[in-house]
Image 1 (tube, rainbow, N blue to C red):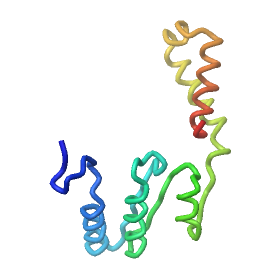
Image 2 (cartoon, one colour):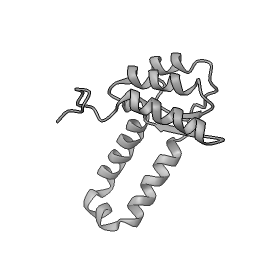
Image 3 (spheres, rainbow, N blue to C red):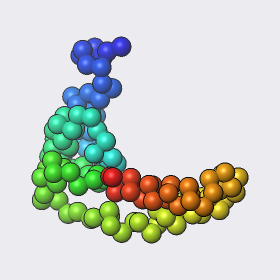
Length: 127
């Protein structure tokens, strides 16, 4: 089922731009947080929208893997690389999860638990 504009995507750049521009006029301070930018199927339209937002008083906080198109787009913005600093946190969280779920731990066993831990860490880095 499509939208009135003929697209099948729930994302409409024109509607989103209008909404964010309205927010920027209505409120003293607006911060827009976007997580998983690299998971967007149409990054061109999204980057176009974010470009429009940067022309307003809105502030952006964006989380994404450092793909070339995003790095180029945000090249003048301050960045924080979190990719290398979270491995021990991810492992610690997974181990605590297994401790709290003893039935799952018993079903998985030591080798599968270790393999799952390694896989989760790898996927957290985009692998």
